[in-house]
Length: 400
Image 1 (cartoon, rainbow, N blue to C red):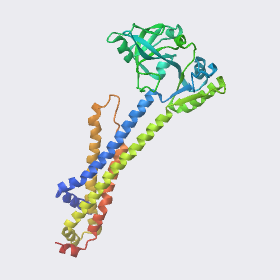
Image 2: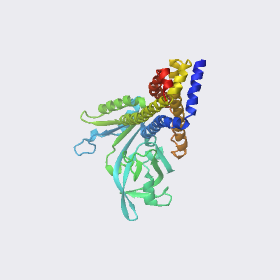
Image 3: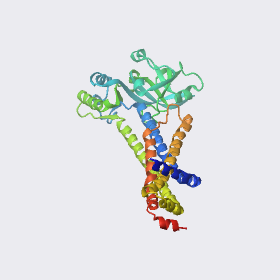
Image 4: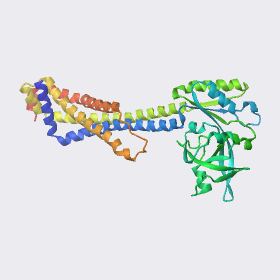
């Protein structure tokens, strides 16, 4: 124990006598270990953000569309109906909510000019499934749906174009032959960038009123919300089975989920993390080579010192441990500083991030950065340490 303590003390004294050299040597380790912590933190944050955005749309959402819907040769018996929607909710286990929609290009008159909008008829449950947020006013209630009330919801873009700075609630807009009273202004909880039926300029009305425009009472899209993401595959299969049992065998339906998109997002995030970690490990490799080079120079410079220590009885392993301790202190100290920097940067940038986004700290990345950095120092410090330990005392003492 005394020998180890003495060897460690000699190693520390040697590093103190060359502080600038030790700091510059550990700089690569600092950068490499900080990079590992930062890469993992950024990867986890970005993955959490992307997956959160997708899940906000509905990771447990299943939707169905008729293939070639609306084509002239398509029989009406192929079309999705409200009865199909109710059958899905009643017979498919794990379904917590259903909704149906039908959209139609329409126009509203603004300042004597017609402006195109996307008219969407919806059933009960649509707000819960699509997670719509009411900016002003209210959503449809049961009476609006049952009584075919001529009321509508509009996006903020429609509100700005039609009503300007005036309050749109209670105002009227005319689409075709019907005039609707605006009862609410809404937005999507998470933007789908036009990939859903909701566009920038959209108007939502009760589905029961869409028959005035289309002449038929059918759905374009049937939505079903599963109890959880794990239930989605079973719900997907059951919905397909229910629809095929209720319609002619020739009818084809496209049943879709966000599971594939979620899986792709996770795989892309993992691939990027691996690439960035490889870059961080390359930085550590370069720093390890730097440690080895400096330690070889140090051994050369301290040849006479090594000879004196051996002459007064220092064992082979004591000389080796001394230089291994020096390499460990350089890499370990650099790892600690790098880890602290890697943890401090996310904390410093947190105030500038969106309010609902938090940067997670990965304990695994901290441990990995420390272990890999120290291992790098010991691995590349072994050759110089072994070279120093194998020196002959007489030759070392004669060295000038």
